[in-house]
Amino acid sequence: MSLHSFNRRGATLIAVTLMLALAIVLSPITSQAMPLAPSDFTPTVYVYLPVIEKEGSPPLPAPSLTPTQPASSMSGHWVGTTSRGRALSFDVSLNGAQWSNFVLTTDFAAPNCGASYQELTQTTAGPGNITSNQFSFSGGVFSFTGQFNSATTASGTYTFSNYPFVYSLPGPPYVCVFYLTQSGTWTANWQSTPAPTHTPTPSATSATTPTPTQTPTATPTTPPASTPVPGHWAGTTSRGRSMSFDVSLNSAQWMSFTLSTDFSAPSCGVGSSVLTVTRPGPGSITNNQFSSLGGGYSFTGQFNSATAASGTYTFDNFQIVIGLPYPPYVCFYYLTQSGTWTAEGP
Image 1 (tube, helix red, strand yellow):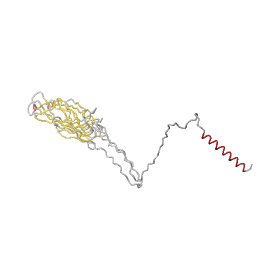
Image 2 (cartoon, one colour; image 1 turned 90 degrees about the vertical axis):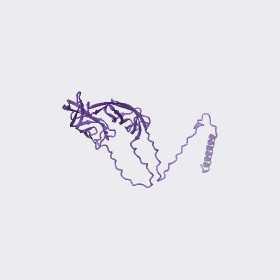
Image 3 (tube, helix red, strand yellow; image 1 turned 120 degrees about the vertical axis):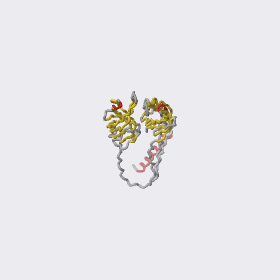
Image 4 (cartoon, helix red, strand yellow; image 1 turned 60 degrees about the vertical axis):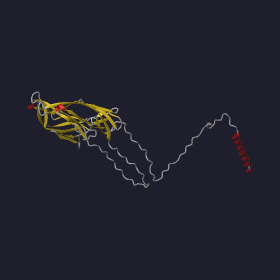
């Protein structure tokens, strides 16, 4: 076959192929044809734009978080006055769930005992629960209630019910007992709270590449093992009598140190009796130690661990007034005694 005839046949084949392709394109689409997409199809187009950060530009600021605080039972120190114009104060725990150190002062008169004007300061260590923005305490001869009206205001009531006072008289019967019954109201305002921890805001730095330095590993610090746990502590003396005290929520103060001891006063006709002395405090706890001195009675304390404590007590010519059913109707006994005590925390 010659080259001329081959070229002519190839041209013919190409022409036939093109005609068939054109016929297929121009032919109508039958009803059996399936569309590639529905007529109402709208394609979604995604456009990706690169984020370009200029070298040395400050970082985007982080969103600031506004701290929230409860609408009531605000933690901190509260101060106010009673309906008699006397001072009143108490504390609320950091989580707003407990009250402590409720201190209320009132005035009264006991004319039958020769006392025209007296002041009494009653300290209730607590702690006690705050429920639904309300709290209360009932100790038999003294009770109070409280209500948080807002985050910074509170109000309540107080009652003394047959609260006993013993007065010494220069003549028969030498002793006068007065029972205080009094009630009133109080209001208080939020005074202070622990300062919040400041978090510094990072500032923009230059685009220079810093030289990497080794970051030291922070060693967590823990309070000393002998830091006392807050709450009510109880124990016994070396004479087997009960004693107790309270530790504040921040473990920095003691309150309501109560100690009982036995004694005999034969010169007053007493073969055996028990004396209970309560020192309301509060007093400071420094280097896990505390003490109190005054009025012929003193004590010391040492926290040996977070839940164990020990100490001493001393009565030095401590005056005890003993009533007699016959003249001279009263006998004064002066107790001198010392001992030790141990106690455990909650």
